[in-house]
Amino acid sequence: MKAILEKIQELDDVPSYSKHERFVEGIVNAINEKLVCVGDPLPSVNAMISGLGYARETVIKGYRELQSRGLIESKNRLGYYVADDNTRQSLKVALLMYTIDTFQEQFYRSFRNELGDNVHLDVFFHHGNIEVFETMFSLVKNRHYGMYVISPIHHPRTRQLLNTVPRQKLLIFDRYEPLEGDDFNYVVQEFEKSSYAVFEQLANEIREYDRMIFFHNPDSLFPPEIVRSFQRFIQKYRIKGKVLREYEPGSVEKGVVYYVNENAELWNLLRDCAAKKIKPGKDIGILSHNDEPVKELVGNGITTYSVSFSDMGKRAARAILDREPVHEVLPTKLIRRNSL
Image (tube, rainbow, N blue to C red; front, side, top):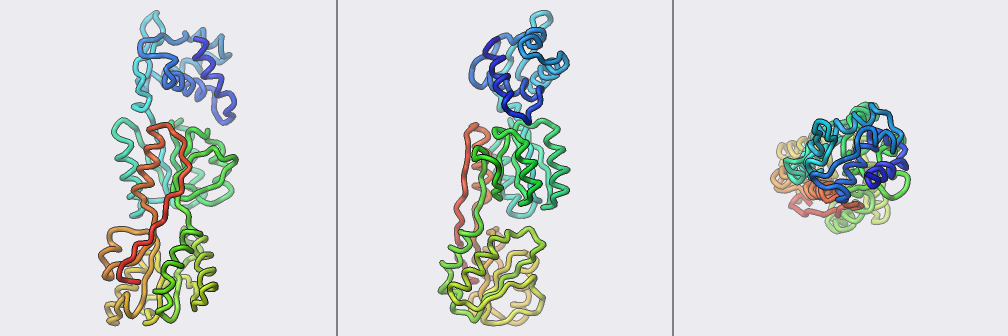
């Protein structure tokens, strides 16, 4: 009994935990650490009240949640006992994503498959909107999930919210967001240094053209770090280039390298190339961020650079299942095709 009480009391140092969360997580931790095994009795409600100073309602509610998760059972007049030590089976994970585009879908499918059928997964979307993010975050936080896997928005209010999640329950993916301390988990990509390295690898090919145009809408979700890399690159390598807000249909010109990231703009560019008999990789160059299967097929193959979102999903899931810390920035790879 003393060991179980101590596991619950250890969580008193987590200020964002409610007493209910301390109670449930403390018993889960005791099971994981083999302090109690299947068939072992747990302290009675009265013993918990006396040892912890918790209200009867809090203790009963905690035991009910553990029952609903299949970890404990109760027998009349015999109290509660451990029924199952497979705490993974009852794990509930909240996944808060930007949206379901091609890249996020790659992450989701890999993440879902790697977690397996024994983990309950709920998916939510914030669409890059801070108000929606706050609403969705409050929703999932109040449901007491075992893990919160979140793709954050770069915003001061995001940091404030994420800092309320116990570190062992939080995993950030896709975009890195600096939080207090260095003990939080993440599996992310890096944009500024990796983009600059890719531009340098392609410098000889880019120099074969007259100039380079980067389409970037400041109001989009596209990382601004890449814009900084582009501007530094063209300045250092003395390449004539500029940033435009969007591609205007019909404006394609020979002798230009186009850096296009929005798929709708890429399709318009390729349509114009076909109409004007302009050949990508010869008359113009095309580069795009984030690889996907269709870019291997269209335009005789679009040169891209990207992390593997499938690897990101798998790595995040393994960290959750293995209960191991993860601090990983995935490598960005240049995929050379015929467009540049």
